[in-house]
Length: 313
Length: 281
Image (cartoon, rainbow over all chains, first blue to last red; front, side):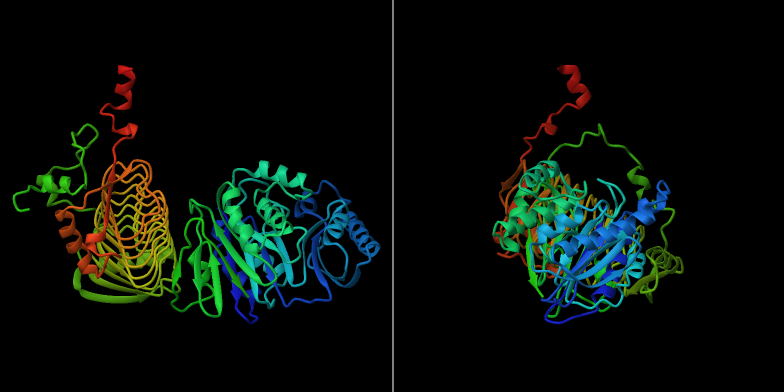
């Protein structure tokens, strides 16, 4: 089933960490397997924020390999070495968990090259690279993930999030949403639905040099949008094209450094409720999520089939 | 109109056109017993006995239990405040009741009801009044998709816009929409009437067996086997009578409405049941 949510404060910063946690917790019944956040703080032109993981929770829990703790340390060292080799200066680093790291780096080179080189370290996956984007995802509900990664105090302009019920792929972090639109900085996607032309689409995009980290159909949307923007499409144009070229039932949200967009398939088979005011836009699979942020009476509505909307922060 | 019998009138208005021969009809009770028929869980309430409660801190189950206990105490007019878009609220009410909901409902609100009059000041989520048998549900703002799925009777009214698949599998009753509806509205409609005062999305009335859809605005496209029919004087009278009490006005006036019915060209209009068809073939 899955639940998705998005919010945007127009022209100002807000408590997006706390608000998105509240919205996603209200959608927990739509999918308790994993929860993910793409939060957009104030962009910093002099640095990138890199969120990455060095292992799956499953590796730590399974007990099959007692060496995993040592291996994570080795992977971390390898990542640091590779960043240095590419000329990226590490300005700060922080571990949210044993396997999830947050880096601040100064880097002027090609992001695709950086991502490919770092992800070549066994077990390493870059969750996001951005000037303002911070992408966090892990197993468990919103309260657990938010607490674990200390997101409650995160301030920013906009955010998207996802609660997942695994249907097409495994319960692990790599299959959790949001997906970063590699190799574009600050672009992330969450999706509710099923894509029926996933493998055809994936093969076509892989032939064009894009990388897939999971077998989750939702990743196709992020990579598809990245590919379209790489070819010169504006975000909204890429999203409109996706309505025709992605097959299946879907509602997805996409966020960039200063935009938040939504798209719905031509059957309108997946839900989305929208609240829009002068200062705030809130979207969610169910109104109860928006109500968790707004207690007062508000007017909401469902976007229609084939509809694409984009808002500016 | 006075000389028409009720059966002929409903047929002329397109509510149904096939003859019910009873082959698949099951008799649950005889008309003579109908007057005494009541549900085991129905309550005898007094409309003059009024109360209100706040649903803000209650779960959906607790809200429904509260309504039930109030009805058991004889309250016939209940005001619910702060429903908070919770799901499956005000469901399974099987007796007459005046229920005022101040706020919005989530999914499956007012489902499986038979008799109450419910007014909602806010919006409703997906599948509002699913399988409604009788009564009225009036929503002042917008509604989500599958609005009035499989309803069998009563009036279901949304004064704002409604999502996709409105009246899917509708088996009777009336759905009135003040604004527009989304794609596949009236999908597999079997009986009843739907009035859309605004525009209708693509594939309107797809695979409808029977029933009538009136549209006041633009229709994006008709579904398989849905065809346009002549708007008769009988239709106009009914539309005036039905829309008036809810203050609804079609986009181009009643005379400008389009009437959609089943073309009855699909395979399922074969007179033979599938098992009989096998024998013939």
